[in-house]
Length: 372
Image (cartoon, rainbow, N blue to C red):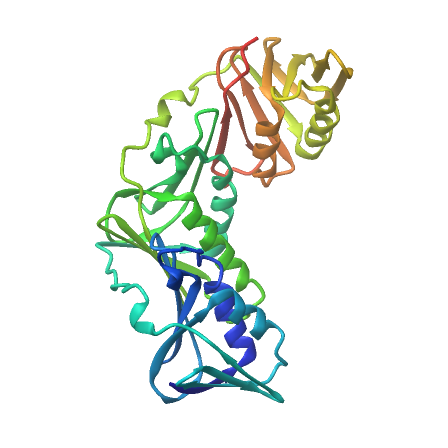
């Protein structure tokens, strides 16, 4: 293997692929990145056996070949190279790298030991705007479950159909649902994608955020037990989660007794202030609606209590509900409008929050109340 490439391109490719490697006593090769050079250029490949990431970069290949080197070491080393041409040559004793006045040999492992990653061809294919998809990820990833007791809740449910993608996530205490456009010719399909897969994809989007040549769309292909995301020079293959996602539509209230429209920033600041006096471990705050005001309060036997009144637009009956303030703040951070709409039935039914003033923002967030 012998090739040349620009340091910037190599660093970008390693930024994509060098993060999913894992230390495995039985399979040390998993902490390595595979360099595969052929006439198409250089491919960087990494895997943890659940996710496989490939990034293709431009380069002049004089001799085809493949080899693996420790991904973190290689990434850290390339990060410190000058912005110049990087020459890579595979010798018997390792990978020889020269750039400007730097000449280094990195010891690795034969590519023959790297796990085989067969190509995946999806049975169905959908195309999404990267900007829309990134926003949808920011509105759903945070409310997935961390506990593996119910694997189907540790991922994001994705349902395609009628030119739309609906994404939903829940940890049983709160629920997020968002809807965005999706172009397709393959009809309806649904899948549960692991949270870590989508977080990794979101990180990949971040690597290209300042790249003027970055693709504006991402293609999703769904195959049996697998999903593939294709974004510019990057391909991410992941297993999907087997199981049935709960019929969450059943818990979304159809009617409400009280509606509040309030400025998002004011509500965030008030919750942060009041929450300083919430009970440790319970993180409870109380919301009470009055004519033209939303009163937030919290009380702790040791630290004291705090009440704060917030001017807003209130309609319907007077209501009180107790909530985990951390969950409410998470939902507020995911809303992209200046005002939010809050809907309350009573103290024992789900609390609903959504954007206000922008009909194109198809996001709904639900928090289960703390029952006193």
